[in-house]
Length: 206
Image (cartoon, rainbow, N blue to C red; front, side, top):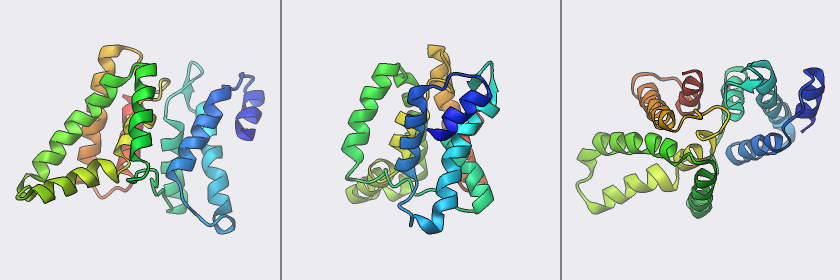
């Protein structure tokens, strides 16, 4: 909130009231839990970088990168410390799923989410086909992919950010597909960490 208000005054732009809290909540749902004092600098700089990216990296006063994803990658480079995606757990799954459906219906981004999830699921099925020798193995893959994974939160909340995703309905599906392809390529052919976040940043520039 403080960063948003200060930068708004410096750049003479009226701060978006909702965005500061949305970005803060997203960061709170994917970082930690961390001990406060030993990680005070990390916990302070991450939201500052996230909000700063909206003002410093933009076109026509519209930010280019997803603020949370951008801050995560920058902080990983600086501190070598990333995020836990703690929100991706079994207890939170019903809230993420139901809340996510409400969000994408309201902002009309269902085709974007499906554009990402369908290729992602196809790749998961193909790469794990040999392990589906039993029903239990299939359930384990499903559980690891969706129930205890950041994929749904990423798809419903971060990928669909209205400012950094296409306004054209047809392009949204291609945007989702492109993100899924980049994510797969980063995972398969590189050892670069934070491939999920990087795939989103790559898509933001497309």
